Length: 269
Image (cartoon, rainbow, N blue to C red):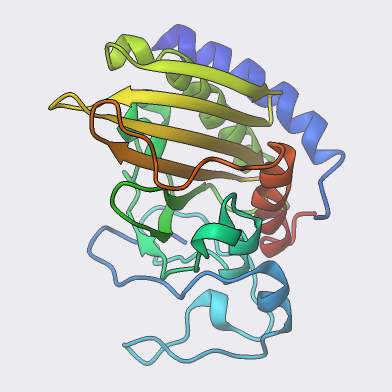
């Protein structure tokens, strides 16, 4: 774990300096907290003057007229800005599967990314807890593709450069775990199509008990103090194929809006 932390920290510092100098323009709850406001597009968040109050009568930070990035402090009830979530129209296969932004679910400080669960990636001790972790499903059906987005955030890098360093270090550790998926899930195959220090895209086949497998298209990007993940996955019987044939565009066509929504919502661009 010590070597991983040293490697991750080196990548983090180099990546943070590069990205913070040229940002793309394109709080924490516990696991018992209620779900946060439904994710929307960055443009929607910018033009919405107000939103309905939550069940306890108080508006979430994402619902205010001029949403400010929440403080990423463990123990505080923080929610991601609504505009942090990718526009469903930018998710691959939208024309066939008509993705819809579902309500975000608070995973708590120990919440994990989807790829960490699929590949059983051990989390480095430095990131056993992350201040803000939320996930949202965009739809899907049995035997076909499903889509989920998860955001792990350390807060706004405009307030602290340490937030950005932490996000890039977490990305570095998760990337190594993704590439090493076959060692934690015997029989898994991985093909990395993008790896540039700030973003990762990969295609995986992960065996499941019973002889089936999960086909995965994974996208990860670190923006300022947050790590955004989009996972398209299809759980299939042995020899099976998703009902909808893959017809995704370029990786950048997914990674750019995935990261752009986060940095715009946190006003870090």
